[in-house]
Length: 262
Ligand SMILES: CC(C)(COP(=O)(O)OP(=O)(O)OC[C@H]1O[C@@H](n2cnc3c(N)ncnc32)[C@H](O)[C@@H]1OP(=O)(O)O)[C@@H](O)C(=O)NCCC(=O)NCCS
Image (cartoon, rainbow, N blue to C red; front, side):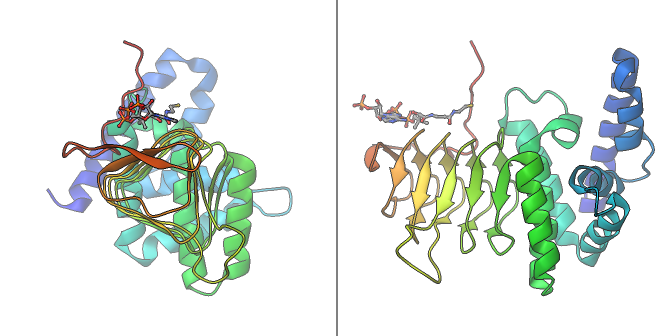
């Protein structure tokens, strides 16, 4: 199955789920129609949703919608990233029962899609509009990602609130990020001063990673830790300042999240 087929399949599933939601919750019928059912494609629904959320009294959603569509149409990369983020949320978040949920309700997912547009604007030297997206995303979703930060695909930002990702940060594919995570500078350096987070890493709630440090593949950062040094691949670090407390047995921490109440 190629990408176009899988996007079509995902869109059909989202539409079917949303139709059932209208029957189950008539109070939200108009919301479901304007966000999903009136659209003829997944990308149109994403563009509309983000534009409506990020519009303001002085910037009409219609203007933003056209910018978001330009970004999505510029290459396949943005939509592929969006699809991978959607699947990551569905597969990794045990509270996510339906593919339509991240699109309709999850701040983390929506903030990532806004960042993909801001990042495209930044690369095309439209820094002012990129900052508008960053600032409104921070206000509306509680997630503040500098447009120059480089984020991969299949990323899950769970809950979203209070996540901050600085200008020269790199977050590779398949990383899971919880609320309150900071990827920041120490305040002592300029230039390339933010963390580099490799594939498969889990950044637990309220963990703070400071400086141009490398978090190796499949590492785990425990909740509330303050990381000031490189973290070796496949290790768990915890505490303030964070110290190595364990090693992975060949698992991918970003995939192995289960907060369900058993
Ligand atoms: C890091 C974490 C994922 C556990 O990883 P793990 O590899 O299974 O680690 P363990 O539970 O075996 O703990 C290893 C050691 O680190 C300690 N440790 C674990 N998490 C810690 C934390 N957040 N702060 C300080 N110490 C911690 C443990 O007490 C243990 O110490 P011990 O060996 O002296 O007993 C987990 O502790 C964590 O932080 N989860 C947070 C997930 C999250 O963000 N949830 C938000 C949902 S809304």
